Image (tube, rainbow over all chains, first blue to last red; front, side, top):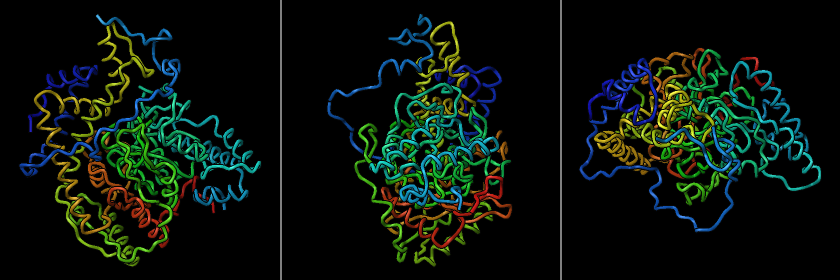
Length: 97
Length: 490
């Protein structure tokens, strides 16, 4: 199992997850992550057969594909009603650059 | 007998017989919510149209028109499930103002059966928690002892059924979120087989584990709700075409010859003595009912919580990426797009949700995938294999639902691991995708409910419900209500 994360790693992970954390939160997050990763470390004890295949989902089905038919969807206005900012046609966001 | 003492199937019979009007029934439960919910906090929002819908059903019945099989029955829905036009928050500040423009498939099915959604119930934020303390809308209190948690994440649904603020409710279960609160609140809760109930319209936490199910006082009521909500849905790509067997018709079949497995390595140091005693007592009841009790082994179940706390946060970190301040109501300002994302997610998510997203992001980040997600998914295979082997020998597996009865509010606030271990007996069923039910089997000395879990083969909910129903035919724990102001009057 990989090592436990330092605060700098937590900072990096928060960046990847696009979550702003203040210093106190980073400290507490590092502590809790270390605790949980310590517990998760017991997975290393499991003797896995060489040929074991991972199980990713409870239903091992093939792709579910529907017929390509036009269907009514939720009206644009109703979807944009939940947006924090829109011009009635598109979502509006702060400057990208 | 007052309405609060009646089971949903009896309420439906009375409505159909014209002995009870849907409007009176809905008004009765709305009044109970008004009187008692300030102390319990089971509901996040109450439907403004429930009485109107009840009125329409009364009119249709009066006019001799056909009505659905649940016509006029009030039902509460966990707030992580979309109801068109009704605020749906998932217990989060992030979705405080979110109103879905569509119904979840199970909501559509309940509405087609003419059930009446009276409100949305409180939950741990994005279903992450085992106590309903992680809700933006404040904690829900256990109706048996208001200084204790109702369990979680479907704590609002469990509490509202236990206090009869609604006759029945719907919850969702990713690692135990239906069964653990059902156990803490002394009710019956079923996590169906993965794929048997559509997840369309369920706000996703961990998509390979999430499943919607009924939370009711009796197994018979759960069977009734399953007959409405289960079934293939083309809008959920993991919905199964293998249909579960009819749950209602076989309920009265005796348990003679059924083989029930008990896994002794689950009766370890972490298990409360009183819980163990009640589980042993209940095992004797199943023997008297004709079941053959056999010892089985699930050698990898001890690793289930560790595997779960890799897999679920990984899936959550991906699922919750959509809350970016663009589409779903909440946005915290920022000078550029990236800062807006970070501020929105920093302020909109609560601590536990942030923690789990961080854990998932870490485990999936470059260089760690094999050590965490891949390894956990291999252990998940071993856990599933254990069940496949066990179900060659037995039809059901019996054990405790939770290691202890309900704990106190705040008791595990600073210790996430202690909280996670409340799910130690329930997470395996989610990892393997099999159905499992919790039924009340007794009380601790200080009057807290204790639950027993039965697990079954995939798509054999009928066997689980039949066993639970047969148990409830000869016991009274499901019929016991808290000695509180909201006690049911008989």
